[in-house]
Length: 307
Image (cartoon, rainbow, N blue to C red; front, top):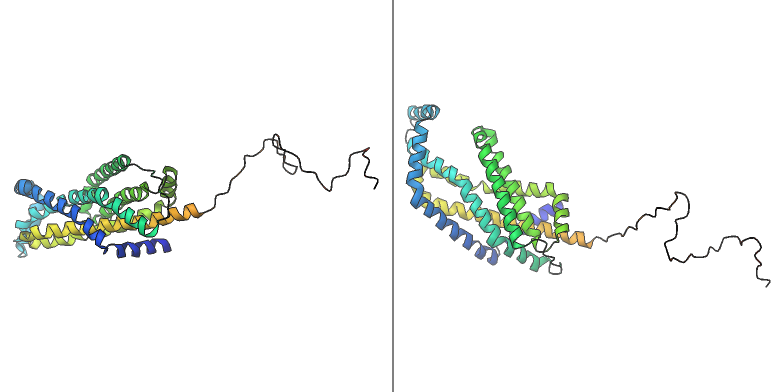
């Protein structure tokens, strides 16, 4: 647990490094352009479609009627836009995660490796193609989990549990693999990920809850939808920094584990001899020379040294 917290604070400190801040600009710019392109071409149609869908749900109309009765009728106008923002959030988060994994994580791992683990041999156990396929496969599984679990989000406690768990699992899968791809061999990576799976998943879940922070901005957007052009870049910036922090956290933690693993002396175990009898003397290997026993009695008829 000490290593977990030590890696956490080191990652926080690295987040203010000029190189980290500079590297976070590229994913931010790409995501802002992508978000505004989606908004320009699809926002009006998406809001109209969601509004028409809500009009066909009796329980939604009952809820909106209750809002009118308590004097909160103006919220009716922002209900559909807010729902569109909520539905678009998983797409924005996934795009941020993948962009950070592609553009930032290799640089983050290299930065940590140069500053703290300069003597750690790089065995390149994971290629770029394998890393991309691993990230895409994990993302598809996370998308399926999100879609399947969406009806459960209507239950108040589960909406605070299920999404962070799914984001945590995805974050752990992507960043743990990338943190070891350059320095660890394939066998070392598999061994470390299996042995430290619980801590890595915990790190991913904590990152998932940190990634929920931009939801506060969407809540503000419910009252100030006109501020969406400002709130969207702010939310994307937070997502980018959270995932940059996650890549640094996983890099510090896993490279420390890898360094300790290689520093542990390995014990070579000889193959058991099939002729070994418990309680007896082990059989000699072929071509081995037997050492004389100084305490053995001389064979019968042996003449000792007369002197």
